[in-house]
Image (cartoon, rainbow, N blue to C red; front, side, top):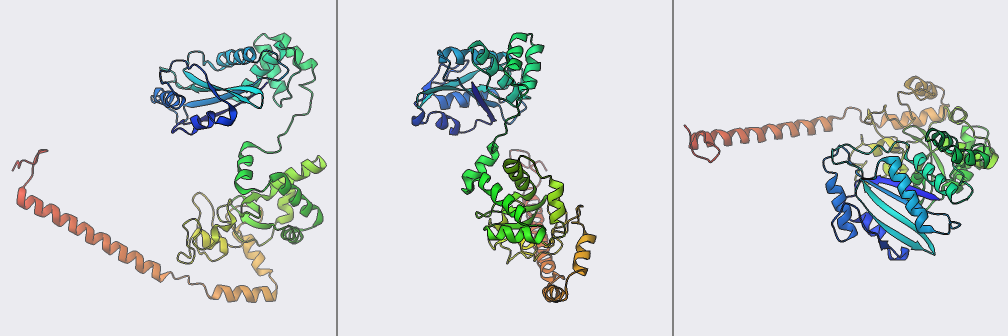
Length: 414
């Protein structure tokens, strides 16, 4: 049995539209503790019932899909819901739901309210493993083999704690607790990135790891990436690889995931940072979009704001600091370690070759570090604010002179 869940605010009718898509042949089930006649109204009612709880995500959307080998699909679903409600103390919570029949496979969705009448919130800690435990019990009772799970050992321990030694023994006998933990190719967040950019992360990992294998040092790695239509930039947390869509990905994660996928052994982040240490990289905006430095992108016109984020990404900013971060400079010289501090940046500048040094001196000589025009603008803004305050004070003074002090109904009291 497969299950999944998400927690959210439940506002609007997006969830209802998703559950009622015609391609899934939906059948709305009878709700519990709700009076609205349609699914969108029922979800809105759930949210309203949770208004007194101290949470911004009061709605728990869960789905379960029984294995095709289970003859009685409806009974398996009912058993799973009974186990899950007992596990999470949801037996008295209102819910609404839909049954889908997609390509002959029947599965069910339910949306629960997480706030109790007392105002306390249902505890969903470790909800994935706890739902997996409920699914393993259904599989055991149906006489099936357990679905592989990376939580198998924890589930067996929890089953013994609940007194279900037979189910725990079945799990151990099937080898589930000794099997290598399955690793998904992409996380849900990474899947959304793939959908947004159209760049398969698995292909990107392979390309980055191939570039890593072809190179022996940092400059060689950059050249190999550029030959594949990629680039290496300096991001918020370290070097990032920028793909064809302009999206930045952590270089250490891509190399590590690619090496594990292709060779079975993961290259550690420290090894990646050691090879890339000392490279002078262009900034990558905020670490997510490399093209945020472009003039006017995302409402940020670096041509008009030389000290903005876009300017830092393009190597034109002076004295810029990100919120909660270090100084942003074209050479990646933040306040952190790993060769990215100010002293390391100065050493790289001193070690630059003659031609490189001449080019840098030419660029630096054109910087306007005085920022006089910004100071003048600040003075004009300050003077305008003082004039507005004077006008407001004058209005209040005239009002008192004409009418005196009044009560809340406007009748003068002196």
